[in-house]
Every structure is written in structure tokens, then in C-alpha cells.
Length: 143
Image (cartoon, rainbow, N blue to C red; front, side):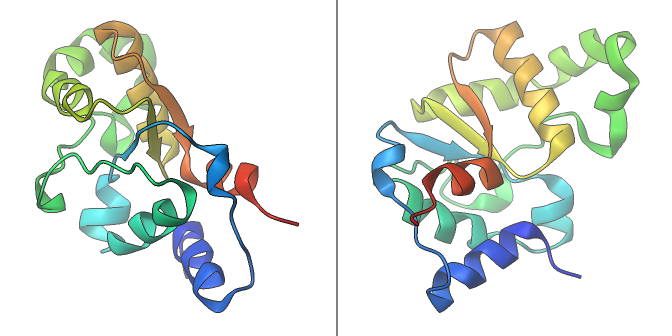
């Protein structure tokens, strides 16, 4: 079993796909989903991909082990509106971490994280465009 992020990174390394960096001309940061990064160990691959997507990638921390959880993990975000207040309060640290990068695009590889980060973006007015890493790859594919 492989994640799509691992497959995209491998395809780039093998020259099976090429990406057009001109698609993303603004600063980009990446949120490491807990299950994918801390549990699955997929940390270098998204950064490798982002290196092919943008010339302005900004990590949230010097050591990615300290990239805060977004607060939507474990399916908490799937419980919906009844958990929104708790999720927003407990995830302020993530919103601050994102803001400090100055990024205009916040990429992630997890559906739950995407939903939670979108909620955080609205609540804390982070001013970022939340995107799936896989969608960014698809948008930048060179024929």
C-alpha cells in the first residue's frame, strides 16, 4: 500500500511526470497530516513534490516533527458543527503557525485536514487558499 503522495514523488523521480512551476507563483506551505506524516513517515515526499511545484516553498517549522496537528484528526472534523467551537479553539496554534509563513497557498494531502484547515481559514482569517497536494500536481502536469 502506498499513498498518492509517495506515487507522485516516485513518478517525478523516474521522469514519468513533469510539473510546470509557473502554475504556482505565490508562497506555498504544507500541512503534514498526522496519519500520513507522523504515523506513516511520509515527510520528505510532499516536500520533494512541492520543490517541483514552486520556487517559494515555506516550511512551517525548521523541524517538521513540530508541525502542529490541525485539530481535525481522528475523524473529529467529521462530527461536524457540534465540534466546530472546540476545534477552532484547540487549533489556534495551527492557524498562527500558518500565518507566520506568509504563504498564500496551504497544501495538504488529507481530506479531514483539508476540511479542518478550511474551517480554520474562515474562522481565523488566515487568507490562504487551501489545496490538496494531488490537485496541485494535476493542475501543473506537463503534457
